[in-house]
Amino acid sequence: MGLTLADIGVSFLPQPFVRPWVERKLLVSLRSNPPLPVLPYCFLHRSDDARSMFPLLLKCVAEEADFTFLAGVVAAKSKND
Image 1 (cartoon, rainbow, N blue to C red):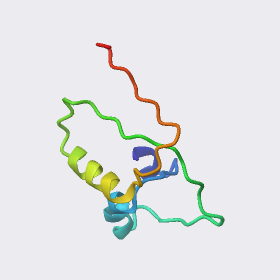
Image 2: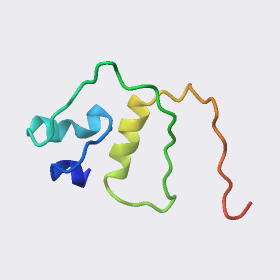
Image 3: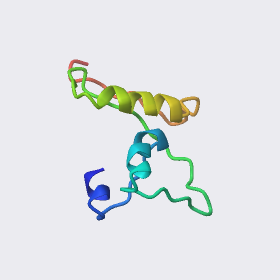
Image 4: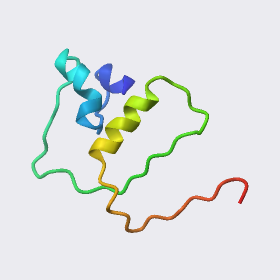
């Protein structure tokens, strides 16, 4: 996100998450033609992550992500397994 705001990168993030920056004209929302392909993804976080932005990011992911597509998902083993 920092590189994108510094005009050095491109981000692929949920619209609700970046909306404040787009509204302040710090970022520009782009559409692609053809649309971006469906991408496999996962959302990982540390159980002790107490950063204040984490609940907002989790809310955005829950609203935007389609968790019904689970093909090819492999459960990660913890260090204790």
